[in-house]
Length: 400
Ligand SMILES: Cc1ncc(COP(=O)(O)O)c(C=O)c1O
Image (tube, rainbow, N blue to C red):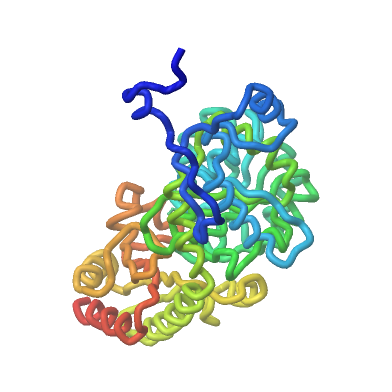
């Protein structure tokens, strides 16, 4: 038979790899699977005798490179290397970690004022599967210790610091130490701070989670999440099977966009912090504002703690307008530079009125119990020129 294939078959074939030198930028490996030169190679990779990619749900060079970079940032300057996985979203990362580590009957101790989606995940998806939620004020360490003593089923202490949108800060070192003494994992959602400002693993946490949709990407053009673990072996044995079987993996395109965004993380965070400090000071002086929540203000209840565990105070400022719901709506509608958007961590300034947006369907009583008042506004302060941001806020306050 002739070795030359027919025209139709040639159309189907992959062209030969033309790469002769290293690409300067991370390539996007848009492939769902990886091919082997022969069956023996395939068997070795399948059996784990030889390192290699098989199928993109299990791992892909683009996704793995970016996950490894976030792990390197979270472990920066430490002796441990850790390990990281990239997920389809922040929620994908949280659910994968919980389902990987916990089994029915285990309890999660967490705070009342978590990101709303995380609370909903715990209550609506994980509790029906037999995981129990224990809600407490995690800034009261005596309460945390009592709960851990009284309820040995607590296998995870899960916290967000600073928390969304109240900016409450929690003591990572103390929570991790208490969790460790009671055989529970310490898990920190580090979305607000990023590893540029705070490194929970260094303070004793076992795992760090991110909605990389936010600051790590920084440009609002991809959705993804990350799980970083200090113990690479535990990541491989307990977290990887959950990622693989739940199929909560990221895709190469979003991973690539995330990598692009991360290149300027350090520069962006500096400017976000400069601008947020200016905004927090400005709002503190307004007679229309009853309270400003920003860990960098010495009026913040955890100011000293934030100073200890964060390099700077971050880019999100929440504040409360004295005149409640109507004032909140007038303020937001009068802004022109800031975009009204239910996300944060982008390079442009974003505004959110939780009572009208993220918490619209949460009963007022429950919302207030989580510290989210009618007049609360969350600003994700961008990297524009500070004078322009302040001028826009002035416009909003005048409308109030
Ligand atoms: C602190 C925090 N964690 C997790 C999430 C969930 O992330 P994603 O929207 O990427 O699923 C969010 C989303 O806003 C968040 O603010």
